[in-house]
Length: 331
Image (tube, rainbow, N blue to C red; front, side):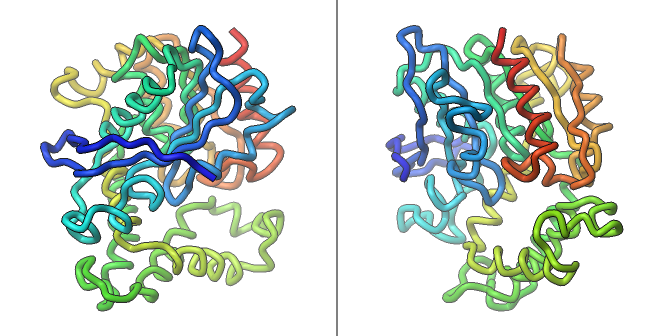
């Protein structure tokens, strides 16, 4: 179950707007009187608020007895305002571009309405990490710490090209019809998931049969699972959030550029790239960590590839993430 926060007519950074916007979210635990025990978990690509639940609960990384955890859904993910559920004038292919900044501005309104004065930690995997960086740059006085896991402060050129590839696989299905499909473009959606599978994991994952540790019989089982999973998703939703990802960059000209923006971050920061991530490589994260004052560069040691940071994926990775959270929340 989740709640919905009404934003009304929400102006986007592009100058367009969402006529009747809502954010879907769920809270765990209670906000303290000081309003400063909040942990924010922004959703990731194809994920939702419930995707973070392996991290939340008694004896887990985020105990609701101590922390007020807010898990919030991005625009476009099918729960918050999205092409699939928007007002008629912007539904489907007519949905406007939404940026990372738009999501963070909306989340700030939500947290303010909930009574949050300071955020102890913004943590997130993949696109959740993109939002964590934006939070630290946009609201430096509100955020105590951030934990970007297998993500980045901007979409790199190589990352952009990877996303163009999966987008092209979906759009090649004639049933997609430029987003004006009358029935789901199933072949395109399955192609999207199949191509994505090759990027989500490491070379070692396939070469050494590590997929068996995650319950897959063989490589065909991996590919079929990814195709089956994406077959049931909304194509316009997928591509809306993909566009949000591609445009991600904390370094707008108004902020003086990328290096200047990261140099102004005041939050404590542990930058945690996956050591075998194919599209958020540790080398890129090293550059970002060096630009953030006092940042701790702490790679997530894993042979799983990008999925190493996914909540609950495997014990060894989960314990490294838990250690980083303890370091940021313990002070």
